[in-house]
Length: 421
Image (cartoon, rainbow, N blue to C red):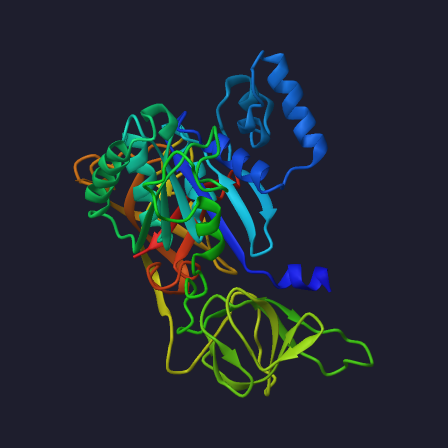
């Protein structure tokens, strides 16, 4: 029964971001340590590492620095995923790097997040990297932002210092498209307001970071209106018991699918009705994102991977000209008229970049229209042409059916990720 309850617990994915040395790894280490989510052998390894460095206290940041280079330099250079749970929720943390040259890693780590934790040093306020990461969180339409104003112990837990950073960030965030921003004053090093309320900041009346993570409402973060079911594979068992079974497996990326619903299959345009929805060993009356299910239809229709099941009166855009905001990942820029593989949900098509409209100055959010030389970590608005039409939505409407990935056809490297406009 305990395992069943654990599996049914809601999962919150969050990403951490901020400037170098703002204390992201220490904060995650503190969260894991104070919520009793660390194995003994992990703790022993970190204690040994801290002693070797001659540190007086256990270096909690080492709990998340998995790569040897990171422990040596005391920095995070890759996206490190960490898992933990409390009695109320399960969590996946994407610990992303703070350095400018690793902006692409933050895009990767934040792409599936419900929430972004932005760390700000109480002494330094909003820096260039804070602005950069906040803009990326806004671009990726992460629904919730928690701004952790860290190192409050170094400003004597001053309410005035906290309010100054809150005002500075609020002023900057007015330019962003962020719906829910919250502020928490913390000391990751000493644990103030991370898991336990701070004795040093009685003036702060809000919840701790863990309490906020446990209770923030994420149920409506998914699009429950526009039904989208990209087919991953067709299930045909071909055995005596299930001789006539034909099911379509995939993950629901939008809307609520119900037994008896009218269904339109795209791009073919055939129509049918949902006859059954299978989830594990159960048959459901309805299913919603992000459930992975098998859908049966009343009619035998020729459906294959890349097709999309939708409602007849609510269709995605069908187009070969895709306009999107792109983050370039590769150390070589886009080649003129080069062919790329564009991956969108369960579909792959060939594409060329037709036009680079402008780059974005991430620090000022201004458009740069006279410089179209794309380098690694640049964000730009581009137009591509695909060899066959894609069934897509604007990213603002659906983060899954509105996102694309570009792959270099010759090297098979992922060179860019994009948000359809």
